[in-house]
Length: 224
Image (cartoon, rainbow, N blue to C red):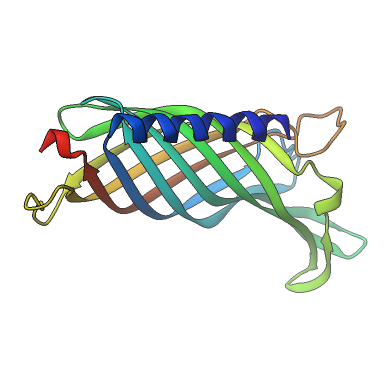
């Protein structure tokens, strides 16, 4: 909870500062897909894989200068693993776990002259739900809600590389200049907190995502 309070306080001060300085804003709608799972899951003779999932969210960016910006983005993500047992145990041949999160990240973002950008920063997450299922062949045996046994909040580090390209025409006949952009972005995320509370074994997860979307920028009137 302390991490949430500190981050929201920082975001509030940042928005107030940007408004006072009449800075540029960019609002983006984001859709994509990712792969994620617990890092140190031991497979042994079993087959263990990470899950694929859809992701989406929005981004709010405020420009600090021509090269640097602050990017704030809330979004949805997932993590989980699938284990296929080499030998059935009590009739169970496969088990999977899936968890869904609401993430809020804040990145420093650097733009190169060639429309390529890099970003890096912290994220916090809130666990929405987590379920574990067991199967015998393709037959579902159980589907248990594990949410109450896991840490509801987490802290992460993430980074991204992307490319953006303007399309359409700019509006320069008003006080606000709306610039439509298309972008594609590759993201990586590493959790720094365990999913299992008071666990003697690290249960941290990592994720990689590829996303695309449309951005609409507002240029401050002083720059027209």
